[in-house]
Length: 443
Image 1 (cartoon, rainbow, N blue to C red):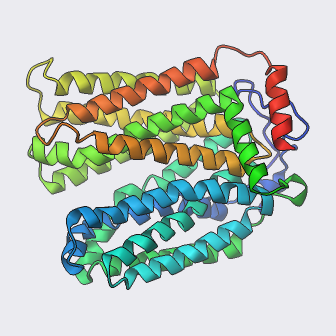
Image 2: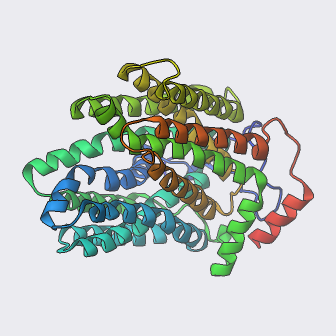
Image 3: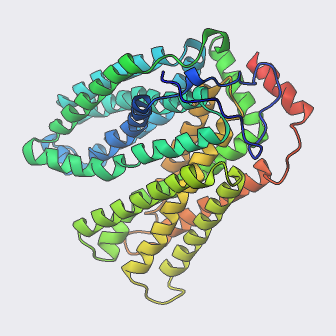
């Protein structure tokens, strides 16, 4: 990989990694840094899951008609893909710690391409659901290994900066995916969406094969089977600080999921906006998240403590969600669409301060189990989000209160996890008990 100067040591504001010879990462070298093309490949890997989910959304009504299936059954094609992405990370993450990053990633990408191609020709909704599940399981390799590669290559503030860069690339995917899906449907039926995804997956697989080198050397790989992997994950969650960052990021991500699930209904059905207006507002909010993520990576990280930036982001998310709850509950009387959209914009944008820093801080706790740590980060976010999403419609179609209530609850829980478990004001080294736990886990 191209050289990019000297390694950057972990910043003093980061939570110290557990001082075990098996869990302390070797010094980063210039040869392990990434070039622009590899950055693009990693961004493409993190963008593949939202492309797989969101590009398919405009095709749902036509799938219902074409396969002569109820809408509720067709919705299971989304649930299956989401569940596959959540569960697949738990399998692929430990595999990448044992066998290296390239082999599990290439296998996952090849299976993803094959499963997506079969989805394009599925004759029944049952077969479509089954291969959407397989698509999600295989596509999980893209998410979990991309994060693990970043952990292999970077440390400290540099890792947080790189995650912000990935957010710039992958954050565009939710904006353009429905637009691409809609354009595909102008020239083809719903099967054409999966044809496009197959081509995208194949091109990305080729780039991974040609341009992404192995980043985990043999001497740093984990040994043992499934039992060892489970012990590693148990040890990671036994690390109070790792668990705090993971759960804080997961609950913040759940507030984002609540927005994605409820905003079409809130904006179009309750406030009467058109589909075009909703698309515009969705794009503006996504751009806000991307812009703040870049501010985090380019201006804040390295100048301000990551914990301070993270705490500020969580505070803004909490304040915005409480304001949304008060507005939707009628405390301020009748409020218009502009006020609701302003609250959603602030909440969405502040997530750009939270996710890169929770990912970086958590992964710095596990330099020798980055695959397993990345799996826990991803799975917890997807599972918490999957639980939060159905709750936004629990009170029916006449109120936006459930969306705001779910967001406020998730925001408070994120703050609670950050304060109670991470304890950012403490700078003392980990206790002997934590050291023992990590050492036994790594071995």
